[in-house]
Length: 311
Image (cartoon, rainbow, N blue to C red; front, side):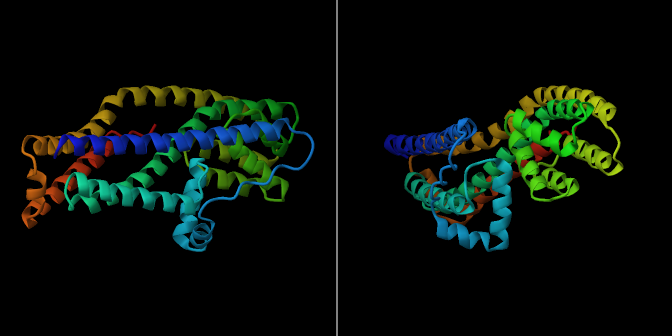
């Protein structure tokens, strides 16, 4: 592989990463600006939502089972993306990286790059969803404290949830706003909170939802229960932070190991130009590459699995 090919590959990957980060930053800033405008505006209807891209593909996907599951997954991540946009962007990125890998390395690596791109897109969704759940868990002590104060002041649970939705930041504020909207149109507290627990599954949220549902059914006060729950959630928050700090080195190792394999492959082609193309032109060479990538993937999975500790 020539220096020009390496520079082209590196520049393409860097531009792709910067483009994704830029689009996400732009979408986040636009959503925050619109939320601020809606909050400060007192007159006139809200402006119409801008037309989304790939609307036809989005409608077709939402009519299928996988499309509806993808829509629920995107809703749980908090990203401003529709299923049609996600599928279209992923397909374009996979096609582009297929061409880049085939031109820079060898034709055999084109399909592998496309598969890795699709897997990375869904892995990014899972990472965003888990990240949002972590932020929500960190806000649970404050949420429990607000509900306890509102309950002690004599407010109903529906009113307390609406007040918490107005006072708290995202993602708790957004999720509680959805709960308050469902309660406003006639849904029961059990159903609205149950859907919240399904969107953002966590042990802490399940305990809080169970406490609120039982108190709503029994009709008693839950001030003392919420006070104790607030203290417990604070302690669990500190414990989770300590565990995450202790396992940070193992987490980095899980990502470094596959990158070392890819780096070794590129270094080998740098030392002996054309070695990758010659290796992948034979069946046994292709099989060796596939097995090596599979083993690196297995190592990544095992390291992440063994370092996962539920608190």
